[in-house]
Length: 117
Image 1 (cartoon, helix red, strand yellow):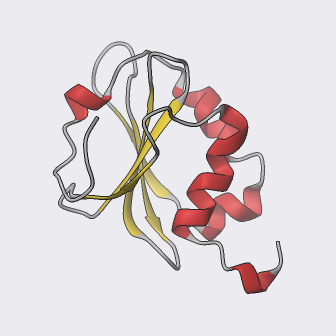
Image 2: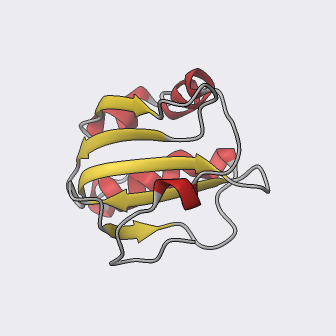
């Protein structure tokens, strides 16, 4: 797994094929949270079968890219990088279940506890 302070190697991070439309649908389940990240510039890899999703964010805690991959356990690996692709934060070795994905990203990109949501 790619480590913090390293440049993200997309080939080694990507594992399983997934449907990017389903992923976007999942991310947008709470539209207010999703758009609070300043989400834009949605990109998938150029392979026939999608193995990588990237979006640009401009949140309170993180400005740069959010990369999402599906790992061999059918869990999500998420990497937060700067514009040069240097990893600033990432999920642990296991990954995230689908119901943890938005909350984890929000914690790292935008959430401010004082706002009370």
